[in-house]
Length: 107
Image 1: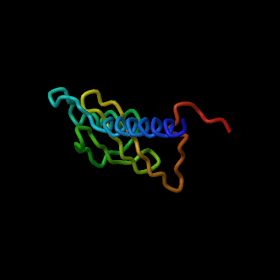
Image 2: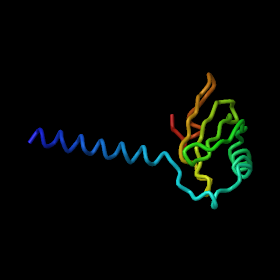
Image 3: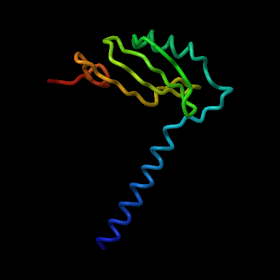
């Protein structure tokens, strides 16, 4: 019984890991991609980010820049919809994760 549980748990972990890794890549057809400049304008206007570079990585747009407070950002976007897929933030000394939470944090 215990070995069956361990085996099924291991299999589940492997399957979920494979799904998570596969999800990192974008698969939008190149003919549907929006221009990089559209993404640049979107993030500058909506979030106040400054964009240093936008490149293609694994079929996604990878954006490097900084947020309004100067925290370093690396974000990946689906090139057709310009939907945010992943976001990594290197918070500096004055960084505050509450800026990125969907709902306000109550203290």
